[in-house]
Length: 466
Ligand code: HEC
Image 1 (tube, helix red, strand yellow):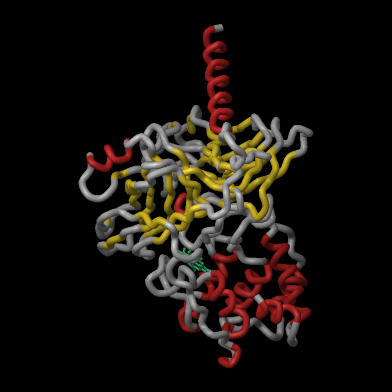
Image 2 (cartoon, rainbow, N blue to C red):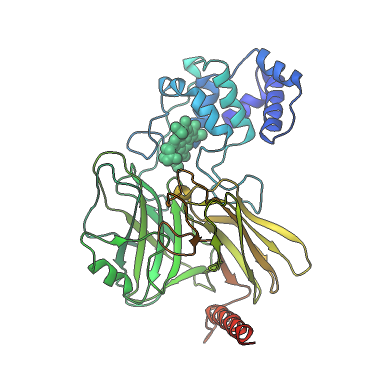
């Protein structure tokens, strides 16, 4: 980061480049750019160079995927590799397609491990491409970064993995596989963090973990040959709890001290992996690292699905709006959100309207990409008083585009398979003021949610009978 400030604040190009940054920022925001701004960019004297300005950005924001044996389809480690693709790089960063961090910058509470590029960083990459990708003085080149291999949070307390490798056939379409991983826990435990390690980073896009206490996952596993079973929008069983969501490149973090998510004794973790074919046969054995809470847990975390399961997206409809909402039944604090749709999703915004009528965004995903879904943790818990309403506003494109699983398009409803859709904003909450360390204290949040659901069902039945 120090080097980037150096670029902005020092050297001959100083004022010119700050100006270009602003012009580009205005252009990115869709504002009219005066002709003089464009001229200024064309005439700028000291364009950014690879060694001084571009390499530090590629090291920090791109190489965790764009290096050997990682999921990026090519390396961006050497000058030659970057020079060849300078124009592509400028295009994908200006569109915010890369790095694949989907939340809109500056919207909602600050997120942990935000990987998006700053406007200055985008300006550098765009200007560099426009200047013909100059190399610069080799002496400026920073030393190559050392990527921490293995578990970033240290050795996990428990590592779960399938007992054999899973094979992804050459040329297979995108594959979703659920692996059933018994925890063999003798008693209930609280989890403070979960981390994920693909066995083969070339093929793994994202992973979701669910808890199964019913044994239904095992039955599905036994019914299919090979490790695990086919699944898509969720674990494909009737009753489960969300545990964690992870996309390649995202960093795991511990929950705040005193907060944990309960993992029940003898439960199974169902690990859903989204594989992306490389064109060659590949094998993978993913691993989940479980970190138990060290400090006594006062508050239990629950993922609540703010979801709409009663919609139809009409065939051919390019921008259908689907909404979901949740009236918060007791004072809670939100720690994370995870938007979820399938292949027809265009965008999703999650916001809260407080009892006083004021609204605030929690997250906005302006360009949905089902391959890059994850959960996003807030830097600080967000208080949500009783009576606040969480709103999910999503748009779906059911026209005949390449990603539409139905060709020709057909009416699509809620469902867990690849040709169905989902509209869910998962939100991780704890009950405000809960203290489970007090003798005989119990976690009543699931009961509060269950009662709320029951009341809603009864209301619907009464309405139908009227
Ligand atoms: C989390 C992993 C990850 C990170 C970080 C990442 N990329 Fe990528 N990149 C990919 C993958 C995977 C693809 C292949 C397309 C896809 O799956 O979306 C890709 C594709 C690309 C492409 C080709 C796009 C196309 O349509 O042909 C470019 C150019 C690119 N990345 C540049 C960058 C740059 C520049 C950065 C850093 C600013 C970056 N990427 C950061 C994973 C990553």
